[in-house]
Length: 370
Ligand SMILES: *Cc1c(COP(=O)(O)O)cnc(C)c1O
View 1 (spheres, helix red, strand yellow):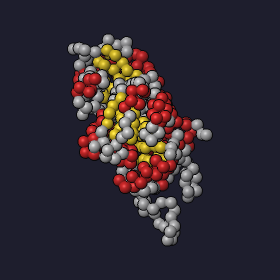
View 2 (tube, protein in one colour):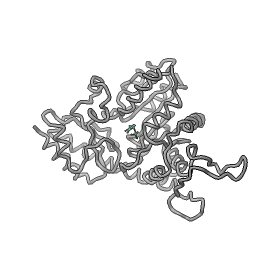
View 3 (spheres, helix red, strand yellow):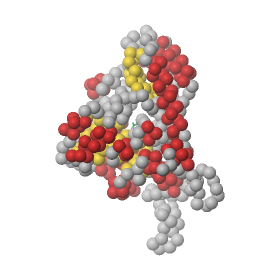
View 4 (cartoon, protein in one colour):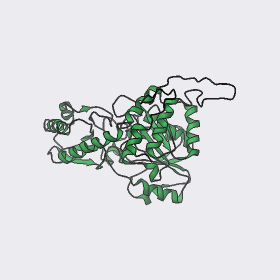
């Protein structure tokens, strides 16, 4: 099989059916497709159902995640909604790891309150505890690893093995936004569904909102396809093309994100203004607690290279305060139990020079001392 780096760069090429020899894939905007005659089709009819540029992207997403089918949608939340809309109905229940993207919890709350699909949480550590939470109504298990923002690691393979041994019908879905297929391929570890906010690392440039769902099972794919045709939250052709282009550099970007994050993690821990630092050891996301006596507001205002902004996974370094941004909607008690305190800072380490990043964070932290 083609290695991942080659697949990312070449996977969507050589697809120009007009034989121009174009190195990069063409972009088709057409929403309608002419039929040769009654009962005949080129394979394309109407773009909500399928369209050539999005189809290329979907093939590429399936290939890099080790899946058979992928669906490119308009945002990460649209991807989450596609999975829930397809696989859950009133009366079902779900189990989720306890430290998730804040918007995912907000989504789960609306499903619980409006559609009577309750959820229970698991702390991501002891798999036997998770198995004990299974009930006859459990339909789906939702995992994020490493977790957001406290960087807990879940053993996806152990979860899949233990759960499928007793309940092969329960679907295991993994939000793979943080590590991407460069570092983690949940479908190869036994998960049933992979979800991405492609707005983050897959897109990687802070200029594209997109999401993806990947499976390796034709029956699940047929259900997802039917749901997506019904609800229509598809990714537009230009955005699909832009995401294909972004994917070409995914592997190199991820390696540099990791190198920069490892460097910063090692250096920042030593600063007196940093009480504790959390890093999974791979990928570009680090979190740290600013020590007591250091002002979060002064730290943010002092940043010159890094930006205080709410997103992650791009070439630019972004600094987020989960308490007031990503996890604002979570009840305070739950936030604090997870370690999401007002002093917790999350850094999406970008691809700038690592010493420039270190100097910027160091001076901003020093300047935040009361
Ligand atoms: C951002 C994010 C989402 C939501 O994706 P959008 O593209 O913003 O809709 C879901 N999961 C994770 C882990 C995220 O970081």
